[in-house]
Length: 234
Ligand code: C5P
Image (cartoon, rainbow, N blue to C red; front, top):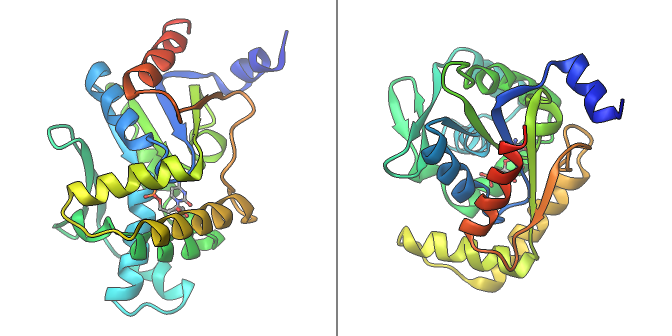
């Protein structure tokens, strides 16, 4: 019995969770929504939760990890999959947040705070609760396959060169009407990747049993095709 099979026995691999991990701008979100639409599943955009934390630390003036964790514990936080718009939003105490979280300054703050173990632990439950066994889940992030859903039968890890990723991210931001300085964006993305890969807790890395795809020269349909092919084999 190879070790993937033995993992199957130990963890009872779950077929209706697909995890997609990888660095920023690699196409995780686009792939997640394309798969969700095809399969009729929900999407967990876990990065949005970390962005929420970055956003709250600024708007609520929360300076310490303890203050942030206290705020999270007393708040109602729910992730909403908006299939029509192809994105997730967050319901924070009955206020919907989305566009406010989607800029690189918030993302950089999120990456700083995502190094803290207490902060990561405070949102594990929200992430795991996003899985409805009746529905199925595409979980997008950095540690979906390694930490949050190790029981997922299909774990995908996407990679692409920093230049390709910065260009894709720039196009996304421009589509949302935001102005972009390409060089600054590339530097910010590379810095964030460094932080995500080198942190002690839940670093960005492929799970041992993941399907690794370099998306640099592939269209979204080609990437989706490879994932579906592997999904069908399960
Ligand atoms: O995916 P997104 O770019 O929105 O994530 C923002 C930041 O949140 C990442 O750079 C990373 O530091 C953090 N993050 C994380 N673990 C996740 C998802 C995001 O640490 N599962």
